[in-house]
Image 1 (cartoon, rainbow, N blue to C red):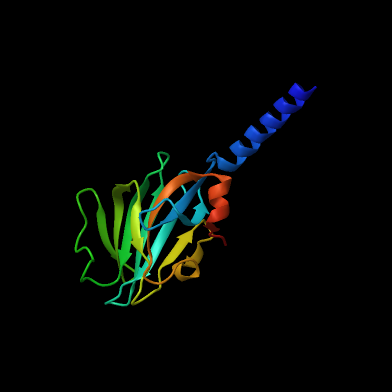
Image 2: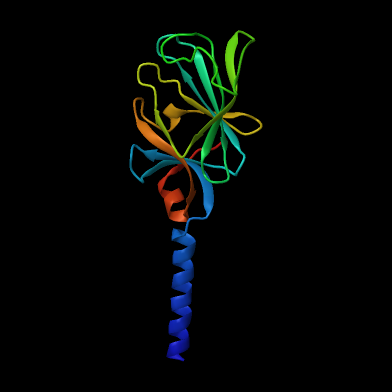
Length: 172
């Protein structure tokens, strides 16, 4: 009888630990600087798209970077949109890309830049970084989740329940 109770308790403990600590939910994860400390996360699926919009600190115009989540947990940049040439802005498209001027903005389309992670700094001088996602284009300011000037590593990762409880979920 004691052996059965011990086995049941052991199995329940293993099940509970598995549920809490085994990564199962894919998310766009914002890690603090170069650590494994989850600052925030946005649940995503393969082929989901998102945008990072920032206000250029010199031109004071929006720059839009568009990305898609790949099935190997990499991130592909497929479009770049800006209004002014100058510091940090490309002057033309690379081979295979399309450079167009449309509605007062420059677009570089058909980009194939693939990243295992992104290093991003929340603006300090002009702190208006935004994250946009979903068909309804939900938008959240980075300042709702991060200090101005903070930097982080963005990756697509699977998170455990424990990691999700420690980080802040970005939501509509």
